[in-house]
Length: 78
Image (tube, rainbow, N blue to C red; front, top):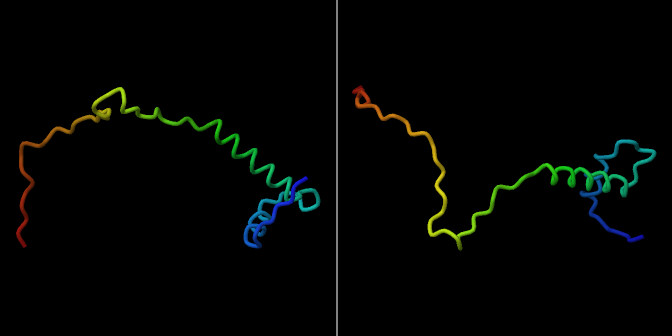
């Protein structure tokens, strides 16, 4: 088993994740946090990474164009 030193501030934060004060050791809490991170990683799907070696121009995101009003905005003089 390895020993890991943490600052007092980090230890206080770690204690805030304790669910059962009689059974939760720092190792149990760290293991629980690692499980949460692994589950989050599995749910996260990154966007396709743009590879600029294949195209000369980056892809353009298409957005619906707004119809421009023929009339100008009214001018208010105070």
